[in-house]
Structure formats: structure tokens, C-alpha cells
Length: 276
Length: 288
Image (spheres, each protein chain N blue to C red):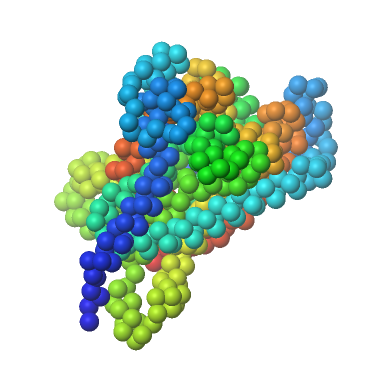
């Protein structure tokens, strides 16, 4: 007897899953909705769900008052820069470990992972000091470097697990045909590795975008990205729900959309290939 | 076949990543270790010399130490319990045949992509505010007195916020594991008359044990150092000062670098104990 699924059961499953899914998503949905309300409607009791006069006013107010654009650019530069830099350093490393493994490869991989486990707060002051010494405090460059370093182990690991799936015979064949190391990487490996590199890029961009320990502690006015911009909305501005919601929506929407594309890679990237 | 040439090339390609990470690990850690043995107050006299293990002893004998350990354990344990239990249930539900599975997955995964400062602020103000928050409206609707969430039930509130952020992660990983479950085995057990609860206990749960362990280990490492959620909501007040937050306060707020560094070393040791277990599992997987 096959496990026949009756339509009834499917209906119950669907209802339960949608109910729970919407419940989990509700805080985000509510924030997005609130961002289109006036302040008075935003705190109305009983709360208004959908039927209000939609307004874009909050977005323009937030933009004018806090120069949202600058924080957005900082976020893009820092998250994008640290990810690209990390990929540049990690691709050769992952390539060499995947295709020319040595006895120590496993130890090196695990050691790299262990640096990721270092609690940030344990090295906060030294980094702070070094930043002052090199004039990196509140600079985009400084944050880019730090975020690149904290995500480098994940980037190496993700790329390594992708590269290992590329059959080594193809590379050998290319080598036999006289391809140099450079052309081997450029014309054989790269085209096959593009999907893996793309998902690594995506996931690490998201992680860097949302990072909130170093971005809060190492920036002030100039290089602050969106995480710090939002944190500045703690009281008393936090009491202006509609504006807080507009600012929040602008900070999370780009990443939410990217995140939905990368959900499959998330498992691989964050479990270091241990769950497939 | 790896030639001598390609071997040295490989070593050269590996070098930048290794050197950078080695520097990133060793330089600040050595500095922290150095500071932890010194009386160092940048705003009150600067570096006042070697004090041996004084800072280590003072850090653990301070009146805020044990409460902060307790707070850390409650938050980490609470979030782990909630995310693992609900993660398993949700993963099993999402694995069932249904309409619109892809969309439900997207809805469930969404909180993971919300930056911590946003989720903390949104929960704090729009949901948990005792006057205008949505929960306050809900409580009033049922005739109850609204709760001042972040002062009266501060720990529970933070556990709730953090669980909301991490439930998607647990669910997604457990769902991946559930999907690799052998359907024939389940069918066979069903034909042999195993009840749903028995099937769960004897087949599904053992199959998930590895994924559960990994979820627990990875989340523990991240949860031990949650920062923004506390920074934005309570600022460490109302009994929500975790070990991480205590160290942060010692270093940046009271500018006692020696004491904070000693705390930092404790945190590093604690994280390493968890990390060793995680490494074992991941390492085993590398051989396979």
C-alpha cells in the first residue's frame, strides 16, 4: 500500500503551514504595513490592518532627516567590499585545498573554522587600539577589512565544498593538453565554479550586511552602515512607529529579497557542509 | 596528478588566506592576553603595570559575574530549546505535501535575514511597548493589564526576540535533514504497525540527531555572543547582562581594559570548549 495522501490531509497541512508561516512572517509584514501609515494610524487602538490611507510621507521624512542614502552606501560598500575581497583571497586557497590536497589540508580547514569561533568581545579592545593607531576608526576601509576577516573562514569553506564537487579528471585532461595553471583556472575551472562562487558571494554579502557587533562598535558618524543607522532610532525616535518602520523596511528589504534567492545555499554555507 | 610544481603553487595560493587569518587570530589575542595581566585604565592613569592573575580573580569574584553567567545560560538554553523543538515540528510539517510549499518556506525563513538591530527595535517598540505596542493593544482587548515586557519579563522577551531570529535557521537545517530521510523505511515501519509517535521516536529522531547536534553547536557559538539585541533593547539592565555584555561594559563603558581583557579570555575559553565538539563533527564529515 502506497502512502496515499488524502486531499483532506493535504488541506489540513496547508492550513497549518500557512498559518504558522504567516505568524512567523507577521512582524515583518506589520513593519512594512506600518511604514505606509501616518503616525496617528500607526498607534491606533484597535490597530488598523489594511484599510488606511496609504502614504509615502515617512520614507521622504526619513530620507531627509537622516540622510538614509549615505548609510545605505556605507552598507553596500562595506558588505560588498568585504565580500569581494574575501572571495579574491579565498578562491586560490579553496582551489589549492580542493585540488592539491595535502596531509595538512583537513587541519588547516578546521583551524580556519576555529578562528570564526573567536568571540568578538574578547578582542574588542585590541582591535579598537589598532584601529586608532592606523587611523581606521570610523572608516569604511577598516570595517571592510574586519568583516572580510570574520567571514573569510565561511567563504573558504563554502568555496571548498563547491570546488570539491568539480571532477578532478577534467582539470587533469586540461593539464595534459598543455594548459598552463593560469589558463586552467581561467578557462576550465572558473566557468564550472561560477554558480558556487555566486552563492558564496550572496550569502556572505547578507552576513556582512547584517553584522552588528563590529559595525556598532567601530563606527561613529562617517562610516556607519545601516545597522548603526537603525540603532540610532532607539528612543526617543523609536516612538515614531511609522518612521521607524519606514527606516527598518528600507534597511531589510534589499537583503530580504537577496536572502530568498540564497535560502538553499544557506544550509551548506552555515553548516560547513556538514548537513546536505 | 599533482606535480612538485603544482604543489608549491598550491602552497603559494593558500598562503594569503592562512597568513591573514593567523594575524587576525594571533595579534589581537596576544594583546588581550597581555592586557589581562596588567592594571590598565586608559582614562585613569593608563598602564599601571603588571598585576599577575589579579584581573582574572577580580573578574570572577565581582558581584556581576555569576548573574551574567546565569543570564547567558538562560538565554542560550531557552533559545536552543525553543528553536530545536519548534524547528523539528516545523520541519516535519513543511515536509508534508501541501499547496504553496515554496511560499511558506519563504515566509518561515524571512526573519533570519532581518538585521539584529532592526528586529530588536521593531520588537521593542512596535510590539512590546507597554503603551502603544501591539501586545499592549491585544492585552487591553482581552481586559488584561499590558505587560512591561522589557522590564518585567526582560529575559523572556529577549529569548523570544532571539528565538524568532534563529527559528528559521534551525528549521531550514532540520528540514534539509528530514528530506534526506529514507521513505521506504518509514513505510515499512508503518506497515508493521508502528504508531506515529513510535515512528518519530525510533526512526525520525535518530535520523535527525546529527542535524540537531549541529544546530545546537552552531547556534550556541552565535548565541554566546549576541550583542545587538541586548544593546538596543535593555542595554544590559533588568537582569539581561550576559557575559559578552559584561565584558563589553568593562572595556568600553568603565574603560577597565585589564579586567575586561581577563573576561575576554574567559569568553574565548568558553567558546573554544563548544567549538571543539563542533570541529569533531565537521572534521569527521571531511573524511567521508
